[in-house]
Image 1 (cartoon, one colour):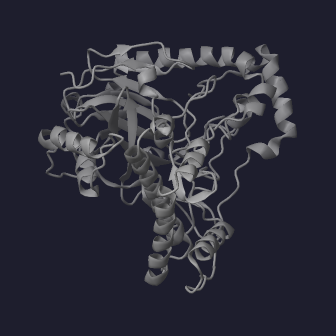
Image 2: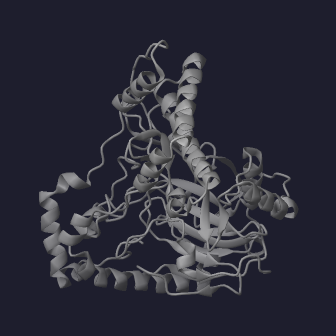
Image 3: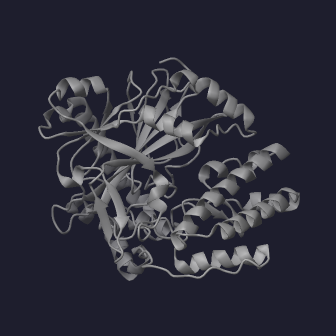
Length: 498
C-alpha cells in the first residue's frame, strides 16, 4: 500500500525516519535500477554439441546478452524448471508420484515459456533446427528427472521463492517502529477512499472517458462449471488447465469497462515499450489492456484468476519534489472466479505493488482480520459479469467498481472508446529493447518515495514491476501473487448463489 498525502511536518515528528534518510544517503546505490541492455549481437552454438553442453552454452549466451526474463523464478541450479508462488505452495503436498509428476510438468512449462521469450529477444529469427534440438535436450532432462526420486526431493526442498523484502533494510530502518506512522497514513487513505465511493464522486466528472472492450459474441457461463470440473478432475493437483482459446473467451466475457476522470493524455490507456536508445516510449494509437492467467488456492480448491493490466504514460508530478510522480503508471485488476464461473472476488494493485484493494462480491462472505498490514476491503453486490472500473485522474486510484447500468444512465451522451485485449507476454518481448530488466523491475520508473519508504526493505518502492514481483504491503511481508492471500482475509462459501 502506498502512503498518500504525506506532510513533511510528519517527518519531523518522527525523527527516526530522518535517521533512516541518513542511512540511505550512504547506501544510495542500493535503490537504483540497472538499465535494460542496448542491443545484442550474439552467435549461436553449433548443433553438433552434446545436449548438456549445447543447452548450457545457450543459457550463458542469453545471460551475457542481458535478456534473461525473471517473471518466473529459476529453481535452484535446474534451468529446465521455473516456478511461481502458486506452485511453491504445493511443496509439502506432493505425496504421490502423480502429484509430483504434475508439479514438475508445470515447472517445466514455465521454463519453456520463459525460454521462448528469451530466445526471441536474443535471436528474433531463432532457427527451427536449433529450436528442435533445445526442446529435445530439455525434454530429455525432464525425463531423467522424473526417473530420479532423490533428485526430485532435492529440488522440492530448494524450490523456494525469495520474498521481495530485504531483512537488513527492515532492521536498519526500524520498520517496526516507523510502521506505526505508516499504518496511520494508510487508515486515513482508506477513510478517504470510502468517502469518495460513498459520495460517488465520479458523477461530477464532466470530461470523463469511457473505455469498453471491443464487441465480441461470447457466452461461456453456461459451460464453465462442467469444463472446470473436468479440468480439475484431470489434474492430480486440481489445477484447471484449459486451452488458450478458452482462456481468450473468458477474458473477452469478463472484460471490464474503464471509467477515467478526464481526457488528459496521462489518463488514457496505451502500450509501453523501450526505444533503441533505451528510453521508455508510450503509444496511445491503439488502446490496449494486457491479460494473463493466475491461480489462487482457497481451502482445498484451486480457483482461476483473470488479470487485466492497464498502463498509463505517467503519473504527472505537480512539482519537482513530488514523491509519487514519474514515468509510467497503471494497475492490475484481477477477477477470481468461483467454482460455478461467477466472479467471487475482485482485487487490484498498482503496477508498483501499491494500493492493494479487495472487493468481496458475495453476501455470505465474511471479512476476517488477516495477518499483517490490513487490506482495504469493500463489499459490493454487482449483478453483472462486466463491471465498470472507476479511476481518478493523475493518481490513477481505483475508486470503486460499479454496475454498468449506473454509468450508462449518468453518461448517456458519452461515446465510449474501444480497447483491445492482448497477452501480457507482449511486454516481455524486446520491441526493440526489453521493458523489464533481469530482476523484474522496470528501469526509469523510480519514484522519490523510495527514499522515504526505504526502511521497509522493498527494492525501489513506487517503481513499476513485472508480474510476480509485486510486494503489496509495507509493515508486513505480502505479495500480490501469494497463493493463499485471499483466504487470509475472507471466509468464503464456494459455489454459493449470489
